[in-house]
Length: 373
Image 1: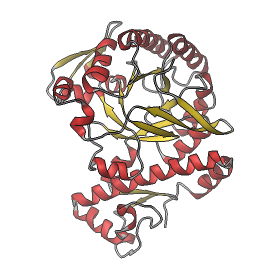
Image 2: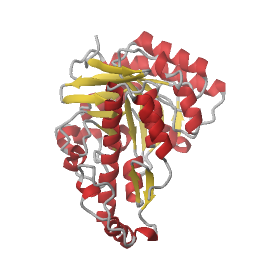
Image 3: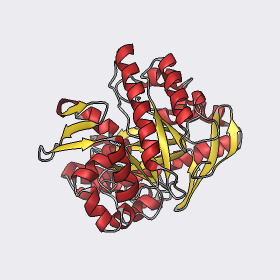
């Protein structure tokens, strides 16, 4: 019996629109989770994040265990109270950060040992410790198994080794997690871009049994086309009645293509990272507000969006803020970009419910991602 009920309310081809019910609120799917790495979505208040329509955010296990430490967050009432986010929160397991710190990391059967990029101190992250941090200390609603993620390209032997270690770690995570009614545990499919390995990984995860299933090991350098080729088959290997989460993805076109292939949940740093660097996403693709052609453009970024950053400030003013290095420019563009992503999720849910996803997908491809006028 899964911890959180997942109801699929509409289908259009492989795409699904549904709702994942959690004690802290419902999550309508397809859903995009803003990334709150250090218990904050960069540059934004939690009220601003909520106002975009986000129903769930993501927190980062490794960053929080290093600073301010998971134990301190627990003493302060858990990550929800600490951050002021009252809705559901998913925490990643730390596997991706372990990969990104590869030069500082040693992976064994027992655990990953790595050096902190903050002060060089040594830390051990085992499956059991990852579960303790996420579920018991931070108080995450959706907990991810610890996995080993390999960069692209990877040999078949290396990808096979990583998926099998991930499966063994997944079983240990499940044992450590136990049975809980108010928290869910997701497993992570690995296997790089090799179909047979994706199948093996999915079978091993299903045998263990999780509340939801993530597709990991993508958005690590393989490119959009290779990612879509994997998504042609990988989601269908996972249980149809549970949510499917594509980790670390991506650009709007990536989200549309993944939804059309049966993915339900996403996270990515792109909207806020782009905002901090002067890039605004629009319904027709990205625009660079540093560009001189916006210096006297009195139009808002998108007057149709119910977001002050999108509606109430001219492109000329945003251009001025970015060129002047004003923090407000980073805030407004990050806020706008998250609003664009949440509007895309609403549009996708409506298109699936009304049986017009193919039309939506075609019009989306036709419109972008060329820079908007």
